[in-house]
Image (cartoon, rainbow, N blue to C red):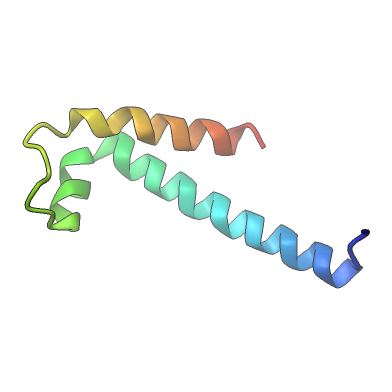
Length: 66
């Protein structure tokens, strides 16, 4: 089923908004993982936030591919 112009525009807008959010999270996870864990206020968060960096790079990478 083909999309109308309005549906295609809405879909594109949603995709761009999701891409921007993903890149922002990726930059946060990649550059400031300790701060990202502090913001979550999760009592079970690990002390070493270095494990968060790979997910930031992954988010940026998949959004840069599109």
